[in-house]
Image (cartoon, helix red, strand yellow):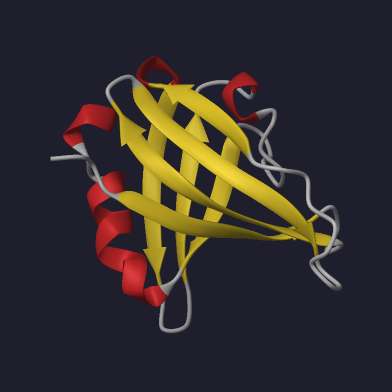
Length: 116
């Protein structure tokens, strides 16, 4: 069975001028984030699809933050390098926004033994 894909978004990219939407997938060697950045005004300007691969050895931890109105998945890496091409990343961490219907998939990814 193929591991589930987790749709995510990153709000307020480039000081609120853009938003990123993508999919996170668990692979045999780590986690892949595929995303596209669109302008926040009309959505007409797009960067094209980009992919960032994070190797198993680069992970520090995962934290799922589920609240009443929002769910966020915080991914931290041991160094800043694995997330350097992900918009909105800071100090080796990225906060991914998750829709309510995808909480179970987010929890499965955050607790996946293959990523620990």
